[in-house]
Figure 1: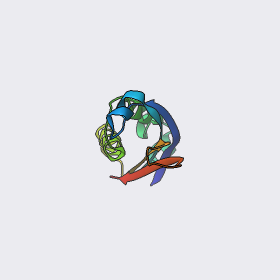
Figure 2: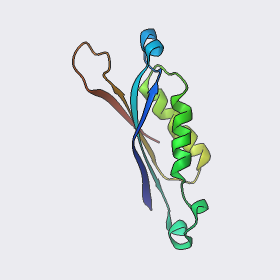
Figure 3: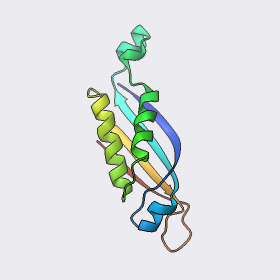
Figure 4: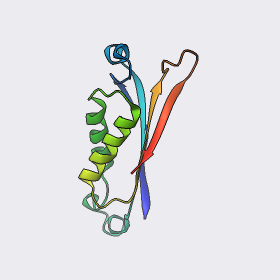
Length: 116
């Protein structure tokens, strides 16, 4: 078993609970960690035997383009689409951060993390 991680993927997207957030947009960051058995890929040196991180990025980009109210919904959607593309992976962990969230004070970012 091993992990593949993509860290600090950045997007400008139109998510948020408030309608205003969905109109003006915001900066988001996504981190992904996928646990899987990479022994065949390590032995054979074949991309087809592993999780292609370009595909992980494509999946994430696709999800980030669809407006959502909650960070939890975004993370859940990314996990589900990764599992659809790679049904044999072990665990998928996704963190989604929103920069400068509207909390009524100074907050660099809000982050949720989900595993599935």
